Length: 508
Image (tube, rainbow, N blue to C red):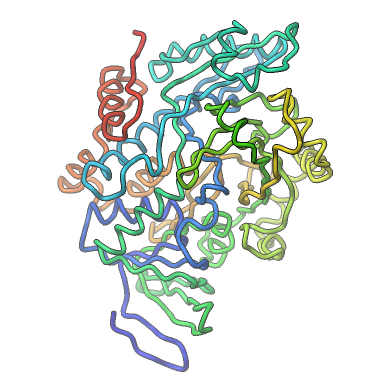
């Protein structure tokens, strides 16, 4: 790179793409762009000292391969009592797309063996009480009508449940109605390991430059359409300016302040509501070995979607772990290693009204967070005992998880609304895009980045060269898996074989 020095500020002569944030989103976009056009010059800016150190890290990320198999908040009950599976179908299809891309990376020796980041773990939804059992039965009946879920199994049989989830059933009141669904196609994904594998390849094999310990201070679009980025080296204090044709902001909770710095009109009115997370981590190996499943329950009435409790088997650094949570809290930080001034600094005249309106409409969320912050260790154990009746306090340790920043956006009728999910915000000329929001982001990263490519690289996406490559990376690209059972069977068979997963054995 050609560099010139001027008043302690270094400048470069330009790059094609700058990715801000070294998490799963930037890794996915960088990998896709390099596979589509190896000649692209891409640089990454990350304020921390390594990749996947915030939201993508295994201890900070929920780790479930979110495929809507067990997450009950993705299938709300309508006023007429029927179950809406629309969101579940969309997320399940997106996860199948992610698996195809990961299989391509494995098959072409781009990333490490799949066991380093993905393995089969049954996904189980478990409920108790008559009303919840009725809900789960209706959910099951609705979901198995879609071939994405037709391997789902439902039971109210306590003996069967004792085999599936012994910890959950031990000590449970025999008079309490219980039910569960199970999908053996479920997975556990270590997004931190996956992210680092992709960055290792991009740096060592593709020549992508990654600058750790570098913080973006300013973003300004020049008259020629390029972006000028002022960056500070946090170790030396040196500032430099970079010039690029395209900017992607994939900085997790730090994306909103950077979007505001860009001053693109499309970013006005967006706000963020930070929520901190905590887990109970099991430290008794004998307990850990008795449970091997991701068991999701139903959130309490009035609780936000983020509060869905789960008893979660995870594999982190090659070691089996058991977590329960999440327990939410409030912090004004947008990142785990952020500043307490993140929230106050994000409030601007353009988003003040949407943030106040969303806050007034979500007083139940405020109450929920206050109650969570006030919880004692005994309160947390009591919540765990709903899932694991025989839990002992000495077997569990409190761990701080990552930060989530929920989206607040303008709304013509309500003034502002709080959104749960992810959203890509891009400028009119599509030279800058930012990803805002949280779950199920990591699991659907490939689908999100495909939509970004279609929006921001529209001049290349429809070329024969890119279309051929996209279909090589994602065999189902451009086709609906939800509407094509034969294609889904073909894709699942392919990805299961390459990723070392349990093969699909559809009932149809």
